[in-house]
Image 1 (cartoon, rainbow, N blue to C red):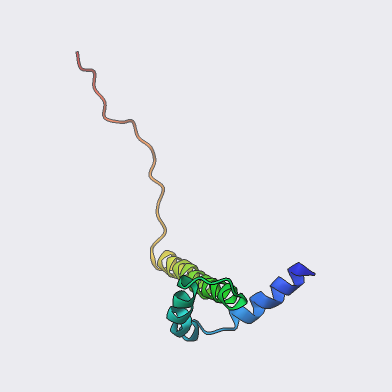
Image 2 (cartoon, rainbow, N blue to C red):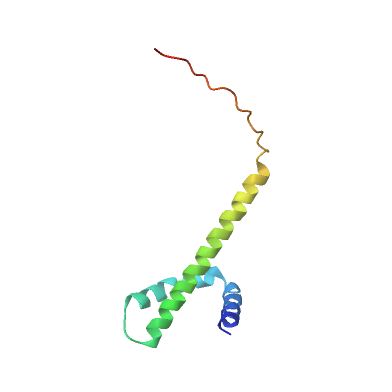
Length: 91
């Protein structure tokens, strides 16, 4: 039951636009910083962290895409055969 609810929440959150969420970041950061013992404060904290979660997810996603593109563009590396190190005896 809980897992199903979280899955549905995640689906809805993934459908939100990061740019639209970013415009709300300051509002919920300020609200979170002004603690009071209310349900509204608790919701503001959850919303603030949802916004940050979407931002973090997008950052990680974009980094992986960028790395994949770099790997596709770079030529395959040839493995270097190991040779004996240049060592000499010093007395």
